[in-house]
Image (cartoon, rainbow, N blue to C red; front, side):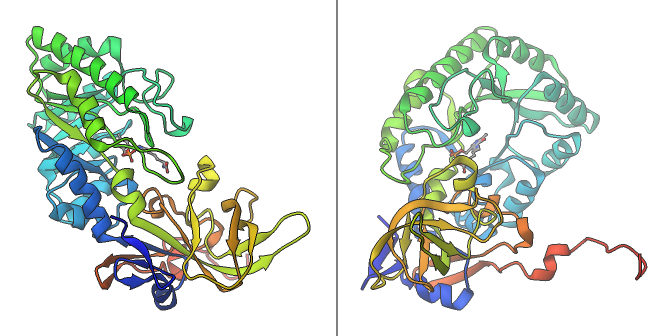
Length: 418
Ligand code: LLP
């Protein structure tokens, strides 16, 4: 079900008109649908009903406390990559015993804090990190539960910046070395291998690479079992890609089948770390058209959101749909939708056929994942506000950043005349 829909030609999020939200809270403004987040999460729950499983939402996709709170109430686990994310999950009421800690470079201090919190598992990315965790844990009288993140050298067929399962990528432990490292881990005092992990990339729309990766991991689980190392879970990393434009997204049941078939008779709990597919299409970014700048050569619509608010188009050349919130009477023309930041790479969309007039509110769709979380203060622009809509009510999930927060913690040089 689509929770962004038109009523009398005005785009709504659940029961609330988006132009009303823009008027009340200003733009740029992120708006999320609680029902859409819940629907996407329960879609995974349903597809996994026949398997022992734990869904650990990837916090990096959208870490607003309200979003995390919605998921915590549904019983979700969480995949974190920093202590900041750990603290957010705890602040939102998440269960530390359902947290997995990913990330390629955890410091001893990160390890200690996560051990104190009592997380479910550390996903280890190198021998050096394994040694460090064993030392940190045993020095403090703990034994840390671990998985090794294996790099299965599988091409996920996604944007090179977000492909992570190839030998060339910085992530994970080479498949060929993983068996020996598990044997070493089993003998270390501060760690206990409880699982195996991989993550081959994001925005993956082809099921084959998932299945290939699962086959590699299942073979390793067999080898380990024969050597007396019994694992309890297999973590297959992030979730399915989403539809931004006309991409065909495979049915979730086919994806789960591709992951579970290679596991055969293994009685392993399946952990997944979906992020994008839970929140991307549960959010839009609202922006106002400030000026129209048509020319014989090209038409530019200058809007009040920029690459600092939504980086994906500038960074990956990502395409996200842009639609007017209310239908204006203007004629359709071809526009580049560009922001106020002083870079030519600052665009939200190029060559879009839209009926625009100055003052229109536009919605950039698919903005719930990797949107606000990647926002910055570049050009000294405060980050947008975030609203979580729940039926007919709008919850201020994050207030617009006040201007004086921009230099909080900075110190002007002492002395008046320098
Ligand atoms: N687990 C790990 C270890 C990850 O690195 C990621 C994403 C996920 C789970 C979640 O994957 P998902 O279900 O969202 O595909 N900023 C980029 C996406 C970066 C993804 C990084 N890792 C974008 O805007 O497309």
